[in-house]
Image 1: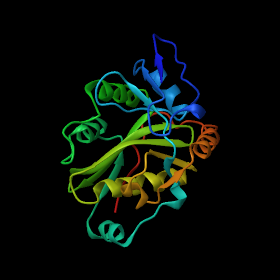
Image 2 (image 1 turned 45 degrees about the horizontal axis):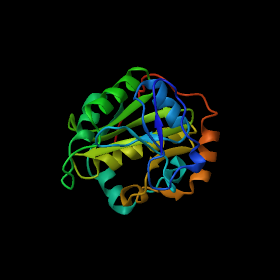
Image 3 (image 1 turned 120 degrees about the horizontal axis):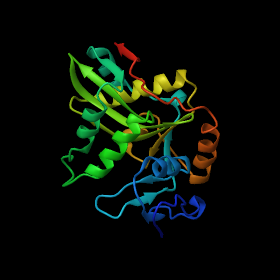
Length: 228
């Protein structure tokens, strides 16, 4: 595992990274490093210093065109009046994502991580998706957008299925923008239920390279709000 020092942005080659362990440690979370890391298929994930940088193999992704909505989720979409929005409550969304889960004793979203993604949001690269019910935030997610790729970071639900409904809104919107790729990082049953597939890292990196050829939709996405 390589240690990162100072302001040099270099990372070790992703092709030689361990399948299920960090490829690098150290460095910082300034925007330049984070954006460079994501463009290489690398992301930070750690619960205490030092910062750990990962590029797992396989890599879970969802193609917006291959979004899967099962019967249970379809019923949830029909059953209640949901309002979906982008970038209306980024700080609130990331705070909920940082809250410990029932099955966890802590959180990987440290204050430094939250501050780093808040800065990327201010710069127009990080975005939130909110799911509202009767004017109250019910769930959501946040991530980064570069080129034609969206890098999903975390989601939360205060109401059953709310995070999935936010993801449906994200995927449908990205499909209209011709985004080919939503990066979900590591495999989970939650994302598999929405159409997630585990790709060999080499396949993921090739798809990421192609997706990054598109222009980045930088700036606020707040004007996109729908009620269903």
